[in-house]
Image (cartoon, rainbow, N blue to C red; front, side, top):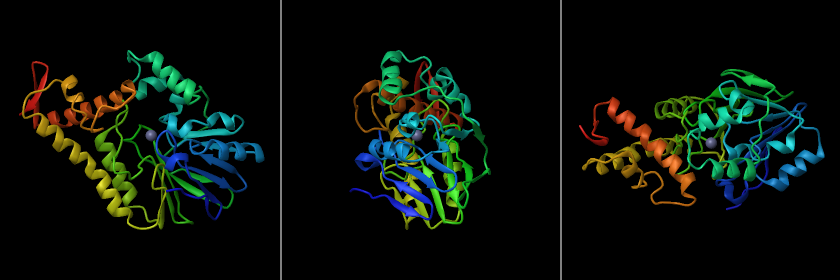
Length: 297
Ligand SMILES: [Zn+2]
Protein backbone atom coordinates (compact mmCIF):
# COMPACT_ATOMS: atom_id res chain seq x y z
CA UNK A 1 0.00 0.00 0.00
CA UNK A 2 1.39 3.39 -0.86
CA UNK A 3 0.06 6.50 0.73
CA UNK A 4 -0.10 9.94 -0.80
CA UNK A 5 0.65 13.36 0.52
CA UNK A 6 -2.62 14.73 1.87
CA UNK A 7 -3.58 18.19 3.00
CA UNK A 8 -6.00 19.10 5.77
CA UNK A 9 -6.09 22.90 5.72
CA UNK A 10 -2.51 23.90 6.45
CA UNK A 11 -1.60 20.50 7.82
CA UNK A 12 0.24 18.37 5.27
CA UNK A 13 0.60 14.62 5.83
CA UNK A 14 3.86 13.20 4.43
CA UNK A 15 3.76 9.41 4.23
CA UNK A 16 6.84 7.48 5.27
CA UNK A 17 8.82 5.37 2.79
CA UNK A 18 8.24 1.63 2.84
CA UNK A 19 4.69 1.94 4.15
CA UNK A 20 5.99 4.00 7.09
CA UNK A 21 7.30 0.89 8.79
CA UNK A 22 10.37 1.24 10.98
CA UNK A 23 12.97 2.73 10.21
CA UNK A 24 10.56 5.24 8.61
CA UNK A 25 7.63 7.12 10.09
CA UNK A 26 4.97 9.51 8.84
CA UNK A 27 5.74 13.24 9.07
CA UNK A 28 3.59 16.35 9.21
CA UNK A 29 4.39 19.69 7.62
CA UNK A 30 2.55 22.74 8.92
CA UNK A 31 2.35 25.08 5.94
CA UNK A 32 1.32 28.24 7.78
CA UNK A 33 2.84 31.59 8.80
CA UNK A 34 5.07 29.60 11.11
CA UNK A 35 6.34 26.67 9.04
CA UNK A 36 6.94 23.53 11.01
CA UNK A 37 8.12 20.00 10.33
CA UNK A 38 6.97 17.33 12.77
CA UNK A 39 8.85 14.00 13.10
CA UNK A 40 11.21 14.17 10.10
CA UNK A 41 11.69 10.45 9.57
CA UNK A 42 9.36 9.88 6.62
CA UNK A 43 10.91 10.21 3.19
CA UNK A 44 14.39 11.60 2.64
CA UNK A 45 13.76 13.05 -0.84
CA UNK A 46 10.53 14.71 0.23
CA UNK A 47 12.11 16.16 3.36
CA UNK A 48 15.11 17.42 1.38
CA UNK A 49 12.72 19.22 -1.00
CA UNK A 50 10.94 20.73 1.96
CA UNK A 51 14.21 21.92 3.50
CA UNK A 52 15.50 23.35 0.23
CA UNK A 53 12.36 25.13 -0.86
CA UNK A 54 11.51 27.41 2.06
CA UNK A 55 12.48 28.58 5.50
CA UNK A 56 11.41 26.09 8.16
CA UNK A 57 10.88 27.88 11.47
CA UNK A 58 10.13 25.00 13.79
CA UNK A 59 11.23 21.39 14.04
CA UNK A 60 9.08 19.36 16.44
CA UNK A 61 10.04 15.85 17.59
CA UNK A 62 7.17 14.01 19.30
CA UNK A 63 9.83 11.99 21.12
CA UNK A 64 13.55 11.18 20.84
CA UNK A 65 13.42 7.85 18.92
CA UNK A 66 15.78 7.58 15.97
CA UNK A 67 13.12 6.71 13.40
CA UNK A 68 11.32 10.01 14.16
CA UNK A 69 14.42 12.23 14.29
CA UNK A 70 16.47 10.71 11.46
CA UNK A 71 16.41 13.88 9.31
CA UNK A 72 16.49 16.51 12.06
CA UNK A 73 19.83 17.54 10.59
CA UNK A 74 18.17 18.80 7.39
CA UNK A 75 16.48 21.48 9.51
CA UNK A 76 19.53 22.75 11.38
CA UNK A 77 18.34 26.38 11.50
CA UNK A 78 14.85 25.62 12.79
CA UNK A 79 13.93 26.00 16.46
CA UNK A 80 13.69 22.54 18.00
CA UNK A 81 10.57 21.98 20.13
CA UNK A 82 10.34 18.88 22.33
CA UNK A 83 8.58 17.95 25.56
CA UNK A 84 10.36 19.21 28.66
CA UNK A 85 10.94 15.67 29.96
CA UNK A 86 13.05 14.87 26.89
CA UNK A 87 14.87 18.18 26.42
CA UNK A 88 17.89 16.79 28.34
CA UNK A 89 17.96 13.76 26.00
CA UNK A 90 18.46 16.05 23.01
CA UNK A 91 21.12 18.12 24.75
CA UNK A 92 23.22 15.14 25.79
CA UNK A 93 23.92 11.84 24.02
CA UNK A 94 24.76 10.26 27.38
CA UNK A 95 21.35 11.25 28.82
CA UNK A 96 19.63 10.00 25.68
CA UNK A 97 21.36 6.61 26.05
CA UNK A 98 20.34 6.42 29.73
CA UNK A 99 16.67 7.02 28.91
CA UNK A 100 16.83 4.53 26.04
CA UNK A 101 18.36 1.88 28.31
CA UNK A 102 21.72 1.81 26.55
CA UNK A 103 23.92 3.22 29.28
CA UNK A 104 25.33 -0.21 30.16
CA UNK A 105 24.98 -2.05 26.87
CA UNK A 106 27.86 -4.34 25.84
CA UNK A 107 26.97 -3.40 22.23
CA UNK A 108 27.81 0.27 22.59
CA UNK A 109 29.93 0.34 19.42
CA UNK A 110 27.10 -1.17 17.35
CA UNK A 111 24.55 1.22 18.85
CA UNK A 112 26.78 4.28 18.22
CA UNK A 113 27.17 3.24 14.62
CA UNK A 114 23.43 2.66 14.34
CA UNK A 115 22.24 5.86 16.04
CA UNK A 116 24.96 8.31 15.04
CA UNK A 117 25.96 6.72 11.72
CA UNK A 118 22.71 5.50 10.24
CA UNK A 119 20.23 7.86 11.94
CA UNK A 120 22.47 10.96 12.16
CA UNK A 121 21.92 11.39 15.90
CA UNK A 122 23.42 14.71 17.06
CA UNK A 123 23.27 16.67 20.30
CA UNK A 124 21.09 19.72 19.91
CA UNK A 125 19.70 22.29 22.33
CA UNK A 126 15.92 22.61 22.17
CA UNK A 127 14.63 26.15 21.78
CA UNK A 128 11.36 25.35 23.53
CA UNK A 129 10.46 22.78 26.18
CA UNK A 130 6.80 21.82 25.73
CA UNK A 131 4.32 21.05 28.51
CA UNK A 132 1.03 19.23 28.53
CA UNK A 133 -1.75 21.59 27.49
CA UNK A 134 0.50 24.08 25.67
CA UNK A 135 -1.21 25.57 22.64
CA UNK A 136 1.17 25.76 19.69
CA UNK A 137 0.29 28.67 17.45
CA UNK A 138 1.43 28.43 13.83
CA UNK A 139 -0.70 31.33 12.54
CA UNK A 140 -4.07 30.01 11.47
CA UNK A 141 -3.29 26.50 12.71
CA UNK A 142 -3.21 25.64 16.38
CA UNK A 143 -2.30 22.41 18.15
CA UNK A 144 -2.61 21.39 21.77
CA UNK A 145 0.24 19.37 23.28
CA UNK A 146 -1.00 16.11 24.79
CA UNK A 147 1.74 14.64 26.98
CA UNK A 148 1.45 10.86 26.52
CA UNK A 149 4.23 9.13 28.44
CA UNK A 150 4.58 5.36 28.34
CA UNK A 151 6.16 4.89 24.91
CA UNK A 152 8.90 7.24 26.12
CA UNK A 153 8.87 9.61 29.07
CA UNK A 154 8.22 12.76 27.06
CA UNK A 155 6.21 11.46 24.13
CA UNK A 156 3.60 13.93 22.91
CA UNK A 157 0.58 13.74 20.65
CA UNK A 158 -0.89 16.82 18.99
CA UNK A 159 -4.55 17.77 18.88
CA UNK A 160 -5.55 20.09 16.06
CA UNK A 161 -9.03 20.83 17.41
CA UNK A 162 -10.16 23.15 14.57
CA UNK A 163 -9.35 20.52 11.94
CA UNK A 164 -10.57 17.62 14.11
CA UNK A 165 -7.18 15.90 13.79
CA UNK A 166 -5.36 13.95 16.46
CA UNK A 167 -1.73 13.14 15.63
CA UNK A 168 -0.95 9.95 17.57
CA UNK A 169 2.74 9.67 16.64
CA UNK A 170 4.04 6.39 18.12
CA UNK A 171 0.74 5.26 19.66
CA UNK A 172 0.57 3.87 16.17
CA UNK A 173 -2.31 1.34 16.38
CA UNK A 174 -0.22 -1.36 14.66
CA UNK A 175 -1.03 -5.07 15.17
CA UNK A 176 2.35 -5.41 16.93
CA UNK A 177 0.96 -3.36 19.81
CA UNK A 178 2.53 -0.65 21.93
CA UNK A 179 6.25 -0.27 22.53
CA UNK A 180 7.44 0.22 26.11
CA UNK A 181 10.95 -1.15 25.68
CA UNK A 182 12.97 1.89 26.70
CA UNK A 183 14.31 2.20 30.23
CA UNK A 184 12.01 5.23 30.71
CA UNK A 185 8.92 3.55 29.18
CA UNK A 186 6.01 2.26 31.23
CA UNK A 187 3.10 -0.13 30.79
CA UNK A 188 0.64 1.66 33.11
CA UNK A 189 1.59 5.01 31.56
CA UNK A 190 0.94 3.57 28.09
CA UNK A 191 -2.55 2.43 29.10
CA UNK A 192 -3.27 5.76 30.77
CA UNK A 193 -2.07 7.70 27.71
CA UNK A 194 -4.21 5.62 25.34
CA UNK A 195 -7.25 6.23 27.55
CA UNK A 196 -6.57 9.96 27.37
CA UNK A 197 -6.32 9.79 23.59
CA UNK A 198 -9.60 7.86 23.38
CA UNK A 199 -11.36 10.68 25.24
CA UNK A 200 -10.28 13.38 22.77
CA UNK A 201 -12.88 14.20 20.11
CA UNK A 202 -11.49 13.95 16.57
CA UNK A 203 -12.57 13.05 13.04
CA UNK A 204 -9.18 12.05 11.69
CA UNK A 205 -6.40 10.23 13.54
CA UNK A 206 -2.89 10.20 12.10
CA UNK A 207 -0.47 7.49 13.20
CA UNK A 208 3.31 7.62 13.07
CA UNK A 209 3.61 4.25 11.32
CA UNK A 210 1.85 2.05 8.78
CA UNK A 211 -1.85 3.04 8.84
CA UNK A 212 -1.21 6.76 8.54
CA UNK A 213 -4.64 8.34 8.16
CA UNK A 214 -7.50 6.74 10.08
CA UNK A 215 -10.96 8.15 9.40
CA UNK A 216 -13.09 5.52 11.08
CA UNK A 217 -12.77 2.71 13.59
CA UNK A 218 -10.27 4.43 15.87
CA UNK A 219 -11.82 3.03 19.05
CA UNK A 220 -11.64 -0.59 17.83
CA UNK A 221 -8.06 -0.17 16.64
CA UNK A 222 -7.07 1.41 19.94
CA UNK A 223 -8.67 -1.42 21.89
CA UNK A 224 -6.89 -4.12 19.86
CA UNK A 225 -3.63 -2.20 20.23
CA UNK A 226 -3.88 -2.03 24.02
CA UNK A 227 -5.04 -5.67 24.18
CA UNK A 228 -1.56 -6.63 22.97
CA UNK A 229 -0.37 -5.90 26.51
CA UNK A 230 -2.69 -8.61 27.90
CA UNK A 231 -1.78 -11.03 25.08
CA UNK A 232 1.90 -10.65 25.88
CA UNK A 233 1.26 -11.07 29.57
CA UNK A 234 -0.83 -14.21 29.03
CA UNK A 235 2.02 -15.75 26.99
CA UNK A 236 4.49 -14.85 29.71
CA UNK A 237 2.28 -16.47 32.37
CA UNK A 238 2.03 -19.62 30.22
CA UNK A 239 5.82 -19.73 29.91
CA UNK A 240 6.17 -19.41 33.69
CA UNK A 241 4.44 -22.74 34.27
CA UNK A 242 8.07 -23.73 34.81
CA UNK A 243 10.35 -21.22 36.55
CA UNK A 244 12.56 -19.17 34.20
CA UNK A 245 15.30 -16.59 34.55
CA UNK A 246 14.99 -13.30 32.66
CA UNK A 247 17.61 -14.56 30.15
CA UNK A 248 15.53 -17.68 29.54
CA UNK A 249 12.36 -15.60 29.15
CA UNK A 250 14.10 -13.38 26.58
CA UNK A 251 14.93 -16.55 24.58
CA UNK A 252 11.19 -17.23 24.23
CA UNK A 253 10.81 -14.05 22.12
CA UNK A 254 7.30 -13.42 23.43
CA UNK A 255 7.23 -9.84 22.09
CA UNK A 256 8.76 -10.42 18.65
CA UNK A 257 7.61 -13.99 18.11
CA UNK A 258 11.07 -15.13 16.99
CA UNK A 259 14.66 -14.04 17.25
CA UNK A 260 15.34 -11.27 14.79
CA UNK A 261 18.50 -9.61 13.52
CA UNK A 262 20.39 -7.60 14.49
CA UNK A 263 20.04 -9.32 17.81
CA UNK A 264 21.47 -6.44 19.89
CA UNK A 265 18.63 -4.25 18.63
CA UNK A 266 15.70 -6.62 19.10
CA UNK A 267 16.97 -8.10 22.35
CA UNK A 268 16.95 -4.68 24.01
CA UNK A 269 13.20 -4.29 23.52
CA UNK A 270 12.38 -7.92 24.20
CA UNK A 271 14.28 -7.86 27.51
CA UNK A 272 13.07 -4.51 28.74
CA UNK A 273 9.41 -5.14 27.85
CA UNK A 274 9.50 -8.54 29.55
CA UNK A 275 11.24 -6.98 32.56
CA UNK A 276 8.41 -4.47 32.86
CA UNK A 277 5.77 -7.21 32.62
CA UNK A 278 7.57 -9.23 35.30
CA UNK A 279 7.78 -6.20 37.57
CA UNK A 280 4.04 -5.67 37.14
CA UNK A 281 3.22 -9.36 37.80
CA UNK A 282 5.44 -9.46 40.90
CA UNK A 283 3.80 -6.26 42.20
CA UNK A 284 0.32 -7.75 41.74
CA UNK A 285 1.40 -10.97 43.50
CA UNK A 286 0.87 -13.27 40.49
CA UNK A 287 4.54 -14.05 40.02
CA UNK A 288 7.35 -14.46 42.54
CA UNK A 289 11.11 -14.42 42.09
CA UNK A 290 13.03 -17.21 43.77
CA UNK A 291 16.71 -18.05 43.36
CA UNK A 292 17.01 -15.85 40.28
CA UNK A 293 14.02 -17.42 38.52
CA UNK A 294 10.48 -16.17 38.04
CA UNK A 295 7.60 -18.54 38.81
CA UNK A 296 3.84 -18.39 39.23
CA UNK A 297 3.07 -17.42 42.80
ZN1 LIG B 1 9.06 5.71 19.22
